[in-house]
Image 1: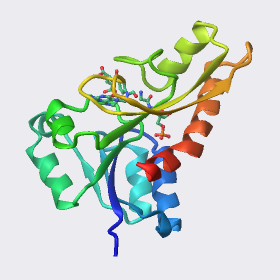
Image 2 (image 1 turned 90 degrees about the vertical axis):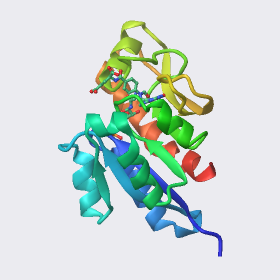
Image 3 (image 1 turned 180 degrees about the vertical axis):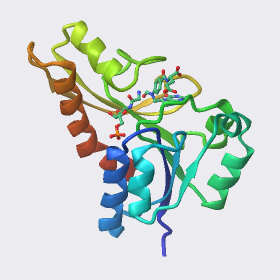
Image 4 (image 1 turned 135 degrees about the vertical axis):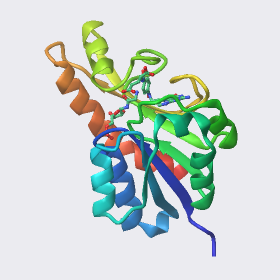
Length: 190
Ligand SMILES: Nc1nc2c(c(=O)[nH]1)N[C@@H](CN(C=O)c1ccc(C(=O)N[C@@H](CCC(=O)O)C(=O)O)cc1)CN2
Ligand SMILES: NCC(=O)N[C@@H]1O[C@H](COP(=O)([O-])[O-])[C@@H](O)[C@H]1O
């Protein structure tokens, strides 16, 4: 009997991507993937409520323990995590975690990297920059996480055409739909 791939998801906000990942893999056990832990850096994150509604174990990390790392590493080890999936997580993953999980941490970025990435490039800031630049397309990038923001090896990208009148909010919605349709499948294939 092949053991399922055990995933921890890191989220800072609403968690719509996390919800889709959790629900997809619960509805399709044949995928051989199981989300076993959700971690947030925000005690008020909507994702924590979503996880509780699904009886999914959660952990809230404070800045001090995030920097120190021992408690987080112990938790990830206790849950026997194979893959760490970032889904709207807004803190920098420290070197100790990158080194503890080499090529085992992935992220989804709401733009076509290497453009529109790096410090400050998260959430609506990304889509506002894309709009301001008059881009004719945007999209998603799923990549491995290294020690810097948005510089890890790219695993998958998908693009969406933009209309000149599209606002940053419209772009955000179009990109989020791409995320929802693709992240679970890319994670399944890792
Ligand atoms: N080591 C890495 N850590 C993280 C990565 C990564 O690629 N390597 N990806 C980010 C996710 N992300 C873009 O996809 C991203 C998230 C947040 C920021 C950012 O500028 N954050 C602010 C703090 C915001 C807050 O605390 O509310 C900052 O650092 O000043 C940039 C990119 C997750 N971690
Ligand atoms: N640079 C990181 C970043 O901007 N991540 C973005 O945060 C959103 C989280 O939404 P969700 O909480 O509904 O999944 C997603 O659009 C994700 O790409």
